Length: 322
Image (cartoon, rainbow, N blue to C red; front, side, top):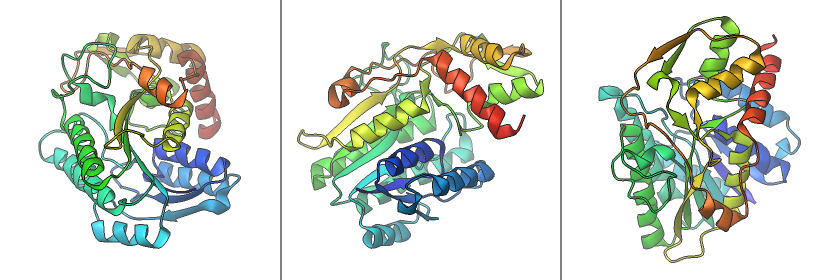
């Protein structure tokens, strides 16, 4: 297939693109290399994609999804059959004027993708476990109300789900929104807890542990996430309108202090910890009910958290040259 992947230089986009190339698909990578993130890391991910077997099927386009005209022209030239939309402004903590970026990229940008993607066989896009918000019973099921978000980011992701439903209803565009649960692994985002903790352990710096480490997250290894994305991409929804939402998680929440203890064990050092209150916009726990994903794709996450942490530490050791 010809698959257009937005956010191809991002964490999940990089792994999804690699998996698609490995099976022989042509990947049309799109990313704006946003300077608010780690640009050298994004460039390193792109360099890796260009070096993999099947790399002759990879092309890259520096396009911002908020630029509707450029995006539309790209779709017209490349004519993708399917689309994986992962480009987003991420993180749950920005507030005030800084939150405007969430609306520009996550809502306006997504509208541009929906318009440009009319006629494709299937659009798979990134949502987030954060849409469930306060008061949602655990484990989180896709039929929960998801109408009490705790952050602007979560609100924009819920808006994306509603916009996708509208596009599926009005235009017959097959869409699947994936609610990702705390993705971690090699080439991960340096602003997320797994990489923050790991680098602090390596460098002997103190670690801020919010919620005093009792907050629980459904840590999901990126290899499992990439496999789930590709399986979903191959199976467009068969309902009318052609729209669905699926959790992508492991289904086994782990306390943050226990995740840190695993890192300590594999790095071989003890952390210096600052126990702090939970921050606004953070859920006490995330926990995925993955039965719908299993029913739709016959896939269940396979990488245990301890094995995933070991892989992450080994990758970081090799990548950092230590």
